[in-house]
Amino acid sequence: MSNARSLRSRLTDELTTDLTVSVVSVVLAVTALLASSQVPQLRANGLYLAITVAVFVPYVYDQVWPVTYGGAAAAVWTVSAALVTVGLFVGLLQLARIAAPDGYAGAVAFLATVTIEYALAAAFMRARQHE
Image 1 (cartoon, rainbow, N blue to C red):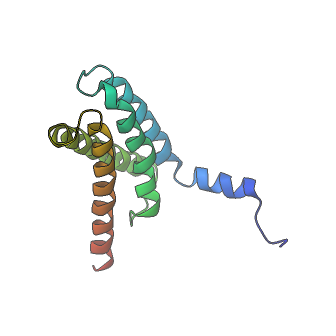
Image 2: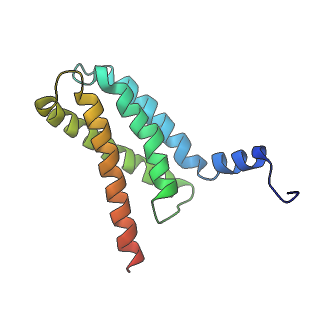
Image 3: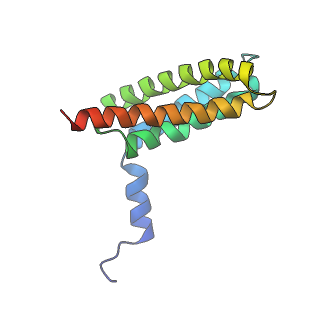
């Protein structure tokens, strides 16, 4: 067991592996949260949007996305993924308001956005593996 790495070193490695993606996604999530508070239709669902950008965009990059970028390329990827995520969330929120009961539209849009995000990333990963 002497070869086992300490919890501190494992956490440090995990937190700094894709630091650019993490930092940019958190900044974009806070920006999305602040912007959604200014739009009456999004005000109640801003937290869902911020969580989607801050948590799931880096997770998709780390766990599913087949290409690892560094520096500016990672920041550009994160901004692009966040823009797609925000657009998808807003569109699905509008559709969910039609189909879901009041109060559930945000949760439905959140779950659908995360599911579609993973599905698109997994499809891209499979396409890259078969090249």
